[in-house]
Image (cartoon, rainbow, N blue to C red; front, side, top):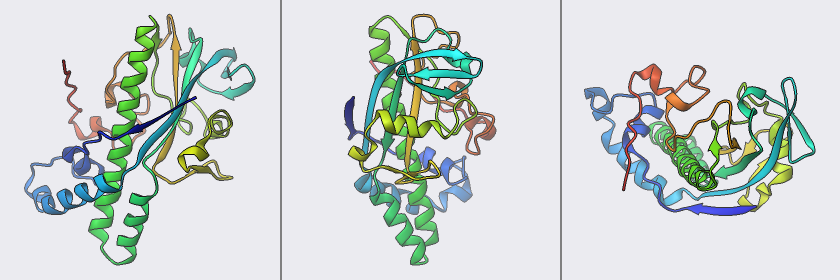
Length: 239
């Protein structure tokens, strides 16, 4: 298993607006929050500690609606996403607890707007860390002449939340300071687990490095979908 730390997060301002329910950063109403957005963005950059532990393990479709991970752990899943896969990327990622603790303190002190915006910054940070991880995985897999599938997160309709227990068995979440409760929820809250199918010829490949609503299998169920806002994220490439 591999450990990685992300030090190059940007916390895109337009994404912060979207996460606090203001998708149009250029509107007159949104501009009223500009100073708070920037202040909390700067604060968040000093509090975020984005880290990840990940690895590749074998996978196979073991029956209708079931996959077998690491040759021993059966998991209920939407098996069509794993058809053609020989392995899966499994990962646990977090931005740490400091931002969460500061956001709670702000709420307790009655600084409701600051607390809300800082919490939104934390969600954007986790999204950006996920995009960095996705880009790294796509490159690693492509260099091996294989395909990647969709990002699949336990708790979605493709994989049940209970699968997180298996991921924590295979990966040492404690190394990141993450604990998994009896209800399968993680602490710190701004953490996530991830499964990406990998194979030579997947039935549902997805080779995009960018995390966009168009590539996300949860797009119709997400309260923050860019598609619902009518403003899909622009994907740019760099040489």
